[in-house]
Image 1 (cartoon, protein in one colour):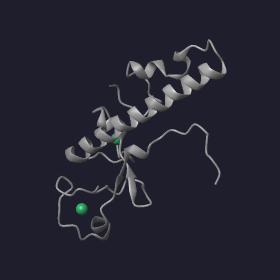
Image 2 (spheres, rainbow, N blue to C red; image 1 turned 180 degrees about the vertical axis):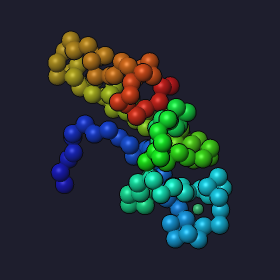
Image 3 (cartoon, rainbow, N blue to C red; image 1 turned 180 degrees about the horizontal axis):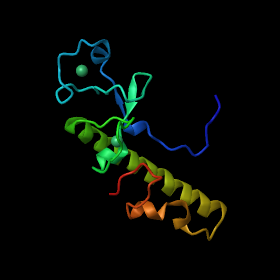
Image 4 (tube, rainbow, N blue to C red; image 1 turned 120 degrees about the vertical axis):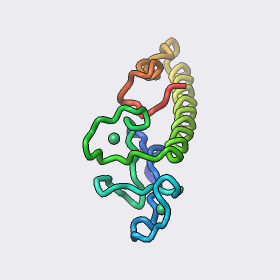
Length: 131
Ligand SMILES: [Zn+2]
Ligand SMILES: [Zn+2]
């Protein structure tokens, strides 16, 4: 099995499972009630999952016909929890990497591996939440 070490933006935590019944048009619940996503037609569904709009989570999406899902409140909460867990994982990974760097290249400043914009919540590249 090949190991993928390329730095890819991790949007996995931002995805939501699409309601299968909704896809068949048979879900009787509203999107506020259903625990799965009811994406509008403009949303891209991939393998039964849809990517939530990061900007909408932050309450600042201004796109018309946004191709990402604007989740209802309960799914938003779920995503916020995912995001936080993801952040903890990323931080742990970054800390481990920093340790490794220190080990291999003593004197490497630790900050060099962490995104400093991210710490101030001004980074648009990191799909992460500030703590
Ligand atoms: Zn549903
Ligand atoms: Zn949006």
